[in-house]
Image 1 (tube, rainbow, N blue to C red):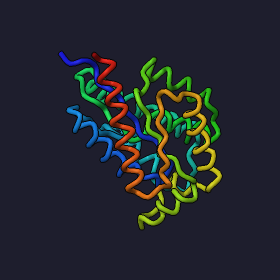
Image 2: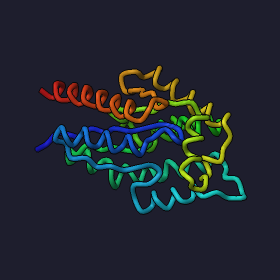
Image 3: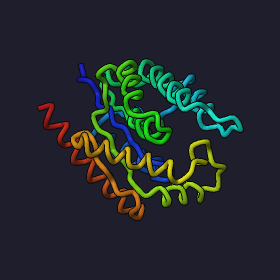
Image 4: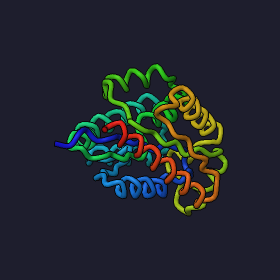
Length: 216
């Protein structure tokens, strides 16, 4: 019977390169012999994807920050129940594009709801469950927004926000890294792509090795 799997999350502002990083991390995990369940937030389930559409779709009528936070955690509760926890119990390793750190950054700091409200929702929805590893792709907001604009796709509801909004988000992420250094690995995402890729591979190989030793 395999032991419980590991839960790895990837965080970063728009334009940080999370899609590319997800592929690099997944390859490292699979090369180490792990079965990987790749998922995302908001999303990961039929309900979650419907909520994702509500949250990202631009609208003339502004959404209440409280509504935004509650929708995020509603989707997360379903995600944990239907996808993440069953996979971990099977012994699979779950790789998730964003998780609750994003709620602290985007809703807690960006929307200025504060960390206490997010913490209450976190404990109610997740109990003591937390990621085993969180990789943060860090870069200046101006760089990230320029990259996002360069994709040639219409901006979603978050990408339409101003630079100050994303500065608050970046700082919240960095504050979390400083407060909990054992869980986080911070990668300079402003580097050229190959250097980011190399940093991710080194980080993951080292961490996977540590996990193997801890199970011996």
